[in-house]
Image (cartoon, rainbow, N blue to C red; front, side, top):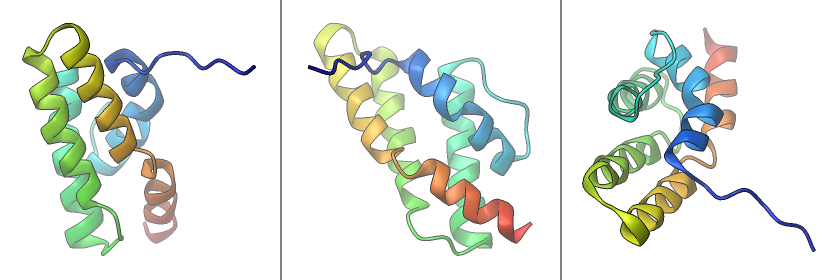
Length: 101
């Protein structure tokens, strides 16, 4: 049986910070708060400027992660996992964006 590591805010940062920073034109975020800010910028850049489908998911993830900051225990875990679902296509969107720039 295959087991996967739990999804945490740190694992989300490790997986997506570099891609999101590229689109936001900043250095990779090291805090959840900075990552949320970069998600909002990246969503705008991908959606408004590049017209990439799914960019609004980054805004959704930012909203959920904002709620996760103040949440604890199971509530935080659920919010972080939900945000991870919204971020599932991030690499594909960023790859498409890289081809445009």
